[in-house]
Image (cartoon, rainbow, N blue to C red; front, top):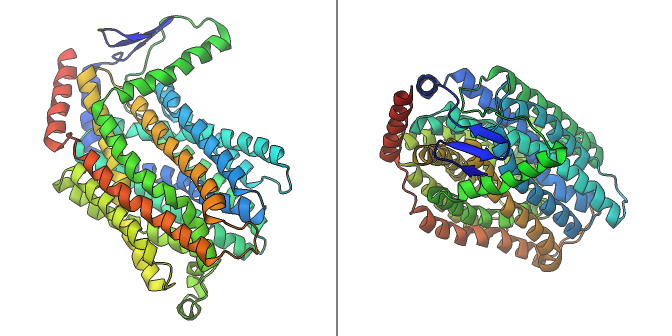
Length: 514
């Protein structure tokens, strides 16, 4: 397998041509999409991410559900979920490679998004319907099977979806706008998914409440992704042409595509700017993830299922009683309210470099998480709301600008290497991020049992020492990691002027080729 001077990816009997379209036609199409990102198209992107974010947010309660309500060992749960995320990470670059090199009448991204939504739903439902009372071996087998199905589904949906960003929006600031709309959909989906604990309480049966909500959110997710896949037309792409018939059977097929895993990673990791952007995200996100899974347990055991302060009992009544659920309150204000701040960051991104905006977001996250150590002792409702809103404000930058910057990296790579492989970049990025996500899940299970000393069971009472240790493990890693990430990000050099030059050079190259 090699990349020859003609821009062709050769592999035994297959030759994937990355310039099988008319450059002039794609140039016209790129100009149209850059300046014609209609409100309808942006809304459809937001709708798709809204559907996908609901079940994912609900999964934040999964480890608590297994440990507290089904009485499974947190180490087992952490091991299984960590393994599943690691498996998920492994297939991300492969999915990027496959979608980059797919030709069909429906496009090279949309078929995977539509079909993957069913596997996504099956995995989510399977995890929430895990039976109680299984032996250790039976629980391992069942949960691993459900997690593998879930991983395949979310990869089939997620990698092609994000790879559409640089294809749909080709201009520097427009990419930030599209990423903002996508994130807005995620924020609203987070609010919807955050209702799971409140629904289970209203249902009067914790276990069946969790399971029913999983069914509803999965059905809604499928509908949203199918609407997106049907009504959003992919732009003209460098889809490959198969020049030789496939031979060798199923085994040879998998051998070829599994080898693409290494090629996809090598392609992305061979780009210095991709490495800088990834390492910056890795450092600050690793600090956040080291404690974020702990936060579900901290909320549940420090504040209880619902707020019982005089403030809550007096004001959080009637329609506002939903906010007495600690998990929903956190999701709504710390994540969902981020939709209110997206216009500000989108505006700031038009005046400042993306790197600067992301640096502000990273620094703000580190300081906010560090201050959380002092949050829980007073058990103050207004203080928690202020803290959550600060998180929402800075998380906007941390979510929106990396997606937009990765699109710039992919465009710069196309200009430098002469090959457009957006899926490989987004697949490799997702792979690497999920690796430390998996590590954080492993860490949570280990820390809960051996450092925190967490007591399993719905009626267990945690000691003050255990709660203090959870506070430290939540606050400290993110605070210190933020400063390391800023040092790494200072090496990123794809600014507005540089990307303008690259885009113009690409346009001239494609126009001349026509």
